[in-house]
Amino acid sequence: MSLSEITADAGVEATYIPSADFPTESIRHVATECPAATDADAAEVISEPVGTDSLSTSVLLLGGMTVAQKAIGLARNIAFCGLLLDTELGRWSLANSFLGLAAPLVMAGLPGTFGRYVEHYRAKGQLRQFLLSTSVACAVISALCVILLYVFPSSCAWLVFGDSRKTELVRLTALALAAVVAFNFLAELFIALRQARLVSITQFVNSLVFAVVGVALLAGTSLREEALIHAFLVANVVSFLVGCHGARESWRSLPSDSRRLGQRELWSKMVPFTGWIWASTLLINLFETADRFMLVHLTPGRFGSADALVGQYHCSRVVPLMIVGLACMFATVIVPYLSHDWEQGRRDVVSRRLNLSMKMMSLGLTWGSAVVLAGAPLLFGWVLHGKYDAGLDALPLTLTYCTWFSIGCVTQTYLSCAERTSLISVAYLLGLAANIVLNFVLIPTLGLSGAVTATAVSNLIALVLIQLYNIRLGMQVDRGVWIAMVVPMLICLGTLPALMGSMIVAVLAFRGRWYFSPDERRLLWDGVRGPYERVRGRLRVFGV
Image (cartoon, rainbow, N blue to C red; front, side):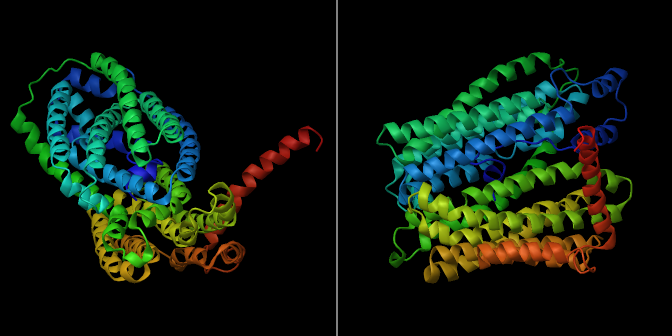
């Protein structure tokens, strides 16, 4: 999945969760880079910057906003599917995918450096110069890319929509791209400055405005996919303007620079780091979007319109991407605990935590996917009036690969703790290569089913590779972990097999050692017994 669609429900709209291990990394970096820091510098590092939020406050605020955004996003996406034909939804999906792919690229990876270097340059008394230099560079590069896209749209129209005549759609998408870049720049900056309230407010405004304006334009005008691009543009502009007020206050609260930051000094440090971020982001987003763009270019005429197939596919992903978003949020939450154990040298504890998390996630998501399948006929038949039957057919396999991707989001945290994130990119690179090869083979013969199959296989390949890299770096993996990676295949068999199969596995898992180890079973029972005893005690107070 692209970061945009994983953490939110449309395009490059995102819910940002601050990394819990960021502060310690920054302090460690400052300590090694600035051994001769003055007392004033030290005080500046230790004291909390004005307007920042604590980690617990950030998690609570962003967690609450995430739930609200998910609810809005689900309702919005269902409304979009109901108000658009599959061909129109397909063109919006392609434009949306392009925005998610292009936005990080035209920013040259620069906002991705904020989380790593804001505290570094704050401690060195060079933060204002750092922000000014990166802002100007990002603005210039992004503006040039958007202008080129607007002036020469034909090639992009063929690449994205499979039709070089859709130049006006590309020009509109270029304008939306400019708004997305501006808003995402501010969002990344707010995260780095630890201003969770501003992140929460602007993201919520973005989600709400997009939903309201999008539905209003679809219901009240003749615009179709153009309506959603207009709405997305408006949502990002409004969110950017809301964020500008907070950015102005943040700028005023920043300490004055005490040292000069040379441009050569800055860019010699930044270019290698931004280059890696740029390449990694491109790789992961290509991994997520390749199937849709290849559907556009490889679908034979006997399967109907390629735009329609993309629209059907988009509809089948609405609910599964919600599941992925929750899984990624869980992965973010457990990172600080894993990092703490890792820094204490307790690698075996990290392994046990990840093993149990993967096993529980596999069972939970498989059962949850079965529930989604049980309710799918109601959603696709009654709410969407049977317009997306092909999407309904693709739903089981879509849920399967989204479950695998979710498990991968958790298991790759071991590589992050080991500071070997390059291996994550290698896994996705090989998965992307498999995806492209399989799409070339399967789409001409199977159409949409071929694209979904190729994506499922590539996600499984990436997951297995990540797990093998973990083992290579010392992670202790038992047999239950490999079984957990197979359990999601039950989803492909349909609602009843997935429901019954996951429940049978869950019951039998507490017998023997083939899935849960004795320590894991004891830990799970303790986790259940504690809340049970507390509830039972409170009921006794009322004589129940």
